[in-house]
Length: 101
Figure (cartoon, rainbow, N blue to C red):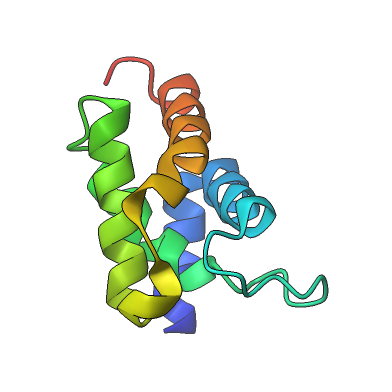
């Protein structure tokens, strides 16, 4: 797992850290305890590769929601609407990094 994360960090560079930080700050699942800043690294690692197929912010919201459902219990994940704001920020970060699509 650590080697996969290392490869993803190399591939996506600062974007990896940015998306992890956006998820940590938004904390849609409620696991932010201020000292566990890597708590959303697993989700980031599965979200980023899927973003290449996103065409809209709605696609990003679907990806973020589905990946959180993959990693956490549906009860903890809550409604998809909780992921709207962070998805907009992730989409903006993605588009700034990969403006050509």
